[in-house]
Amino acid sequence: MARRIDLWRVAPSALAALAALAYLIIAPRSPDLAAHIFRAELFAREGFTIWNGEWYGGHHTPAYSVLSPPLGWILSPQVMGALAAVSATAAFTEVARGYWGARAARLGTMIFGAGSATMLFTNRLPFALGVAFAMAAVLALQRHRRVLAPALAVLCALSSPVAALYLS
Image (cartoon, rainbow, N blue to C red; front, side, top):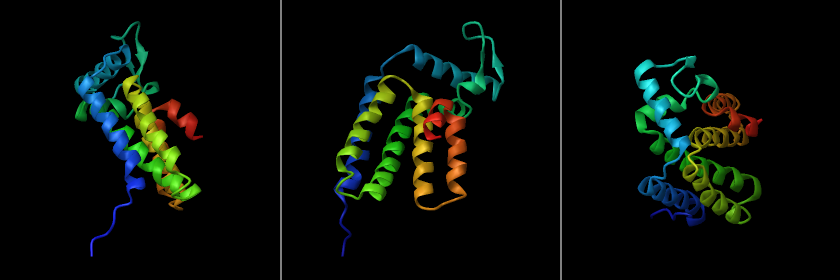
């Protein structure tokens, strides 16, 4: 006998995936996207660095993100962000359903799924990556994974110091 799919569990992530696909097709350009592409290409050339003098008057690279440049180099910053937005939505959906129950979480999870597109269309891609790890950390904590939760929290901070502030 086939197992039924809970459409309310899948719908927020499907909505986020549609928004991510629209983002990848529309390909909005912004100064932030230029910075993400620059940092991915910098990682391709130099690997991990502490300082770079080529962007404006120079900048301290770890404060931007430690994980986003290598992942952006491997996947492209846009694909990395799209995957992060969908992953964040999937994790949030499980957190919300676990805390409030499946029925009560429906509206909030759908709003989160749609809202994840704002991180993409404004090209806040390291933040999207950080939010994905943050939501995964909260989910791990909710499920009493006491080793995994702090590890994901560290990955959140390495992805986006701003997302780490929200997690704390």
